[in-house]
Image (tube, rainbow, N blue to C red):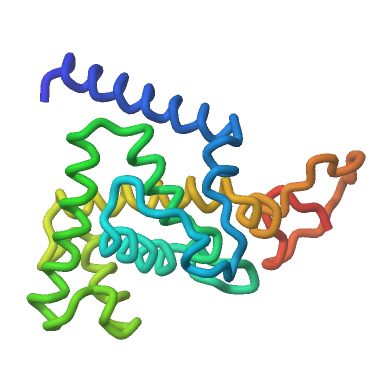
Length: 195
């Protein structure tokens, strides 16, 4: 790839990132997608770009990337719906097609290796396939690996800009108080938190 092409790709990526950040800071995107946890299916937003199957697969993948622990997982904060909206609002048709193609390749690999769609596999099989995808090893390619890295960044963005991600996982405090020196850090200390 020539230097000019690299610079153009870098500029394009920065523009998309700026667009994503601008939308997140406005609050309109997340407010429009906010659905109470446990809301009935009829109250959940319909897919904007992805098909119902693609959206469901995105949800399964998002939950595997950020699972529920003592804080809600990606599925609980509807990260998959946020990703669907961001793909529709902030990416060009070639990037949208590439995302959908990446999802299809994951399902195809699952069917070829396990005889079932990815979402129907038991959790250990899903995790094993994701590890291969993350490493770009057989049955996946380096292109699939790039897709997975992009998916992880979308999931992280969608999760950490949600209310639960920002307040319960990161433990963000809008007014954290005065300076407290010598804060004891433990393995339970969360980002932004002071004990």
